[in-house]
Structures are given as C-alpha cells and as structure tokens.
Length: 399
Image (cartoon, rainbow, N blue to C red; front, side, top):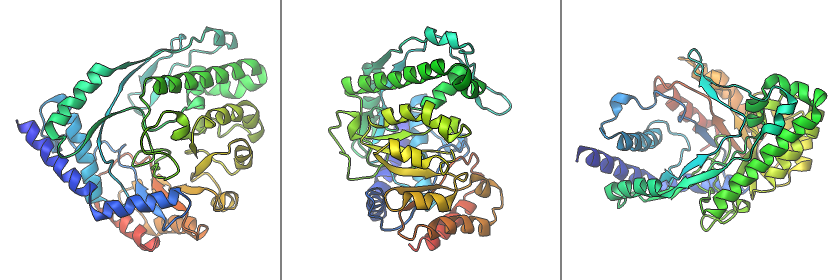
C-alpha cells in the first residue's frame, strides 16, 4: 500500500507538469525547430547519466520493480522542477518490450573496468579469416512478461498517467561501434590496408544484421513513433510534424540516429570508401536522420551530405569547427551544438567561458535554428550551478 501511495503521488505530479502551459509551449518550440521553422534556440542538459541525480535515500518503494519505476518518475519530475531548461516529459509512462538478442557466434563478451567503470569488449575477431565465423543473430520478444509489467503499473496509476508498452524509440544502428567491439581499434586502421575484403565483409554483416533487427521489430509490431519527447538523436528530441505520431508500420516513418565516432580519426577518403556506403544504406531505411555524435565532422561533411539525403539534424561536437559547420549546414539542417562538458562539470564553473561558447554558436546561427545540448556530465553534486546555467541560457537565447 505504501508503494502504491508513493507512485500515485509521483504520477499525479508528473501529470501536472506534463499538461502545464509551459510544457505545451516547449513542445511547440521543439517541433518548430525540427521542422526547420525555428522560433528560438533550444537548450538542454542531459541528467540521465548522473548517478547521483537521484540518490537511494530519495526512494521510498520497497518492491524492486516499483522502486525502479519510482526512480524514473522522480528523475523526470526533479529535472523539470529543478533545472529550468527545455526538458519535456513524455505523455505516457513507457514499459519497454522485453526483447532478446542472439549473439554473433564468435564469443563477443564485455567486462567492466573496475577503475574507470568503462565497458570493455574482448574483440574476438583478430584474424581476418575469423570473419567467416560470424552467424546471423536471432531476436525474440517476451510479450507476456512485458504486458504483466504494464498491467501492474496501469492498475496503480494508469488513471493519472497512461502506461504504454513500447519498443525501442532511439534507433542508433551503431555500425562502427559494433565493428570496434568485434575487431578492435587497431584493426579498424590496419584492415583497410591489409585485409580490405574482410573489413567490407564485417560492415556488410553488420548492415544486414541491422536490417534483420528492424525487420523483426516491424514484423512483430514493436516499432513505435519517435516524433515527440523521445531521444531521436544525440541528446536531441524527435519533435516534428514531418513524421507520424501513431500507426507506425515501417522504419521509413521514424527517426534514425546514424554516427561513426569510432572512425573519426580515419581519413575522410578511407571513411568514404569503407564506412560511408554502409551508413548511407542504413540511413535510407529511416524517414529522417539525426547524424553524428561526438566525432569531428567538418573534414568529411560534404562527403556525408552527398551520400545521405534525408538528414535533418547534425551534431556539431566541440571537435568540429563551428564556423565551417555553419557554412555547410546553412538553414537546411538543425545545428545541434554539443557544448563542452568539462566546462560545466567542475565544482565552480567559469560562466564567462560557458557564455562565450554558447554565444559563439548562437552568433553564427542568427536564424535561431540551433539546439544547445550538454551531454556526458557524470556528477550532479548540486543544483545551483545548473540552475544558474539555465538562467544564463534563457538570457542568451532571448527567451
């Protein structure tokens, strides 16, 4: 009874914030931005990767599943109430389909480095001849277990906040991330010279594996819309009127997020020959594409643009030349500027530096077709610096 009371209180507060006038206006502004008719610059701080944003002592539920639900609700409520950025709540509580993934048949394994907490792969393909050992993966869904979780939550707070089963909403094929895991960083550099056929074979395999997964989602009816308060790209919402909000039946009706961080130090020419054709092939499966994440793009953007015609938003990382990217992107794309996380991560940020970085991006985008996003900050510590940042951003963006 205690757990139910707690969750109903949180769901009620969530609904109040969800249906507020402020929330409605933010949705309109995000949509206008991604429809390429921007009203103002948008700004967002990612708190999902901050383990101390919600402390264990903040949680009251005793049941493990309900405690995790409590944490998710409390996270969203706290972000809206505490930060003051352009964070938007989803208009339902999602219960992800329990999807099972087969393996690649080559013994790919992961372990966590105890010092850095980094997830490290064992890179099982060290000999080009081992590529022949790759096997097609299989996929399954446990409908009964998923629907049981949905029903449990709906019975508790479904009258206050809709509960909906949902498939993956962020579609990031991650071809070169999986390439990195399978063959390792050294072979990403060596194989294009020493074993080009094997490099292409792995990329072909990973592309076909991606298609098989999305065919599975579509065939099983597990593909939801992602044109709202879902993360469609690198810290970027999917709000747009150019994709359907319901009745999705194919990947051509959703956002895809295509990137290649692992090949950012590969030459643009080698990238175009060995990687870009596969990224372009995957991109054509989606209705709209968010391109990039943390990689440098100004040295290869023109090649990417020639090959991929459905890009709508582009990640401009701290390693990309802001001025050159502005010239390249013009008003044809959303300028998704990633702010430097180190500047805000410190205990006492230099707000002069924060302001200068934001102003530089806004100066070259006088048309306001820009979203300013802080990602990869891993400690919350205190709210004051983030609140001060949000206030500064509201002043800088003229809101």
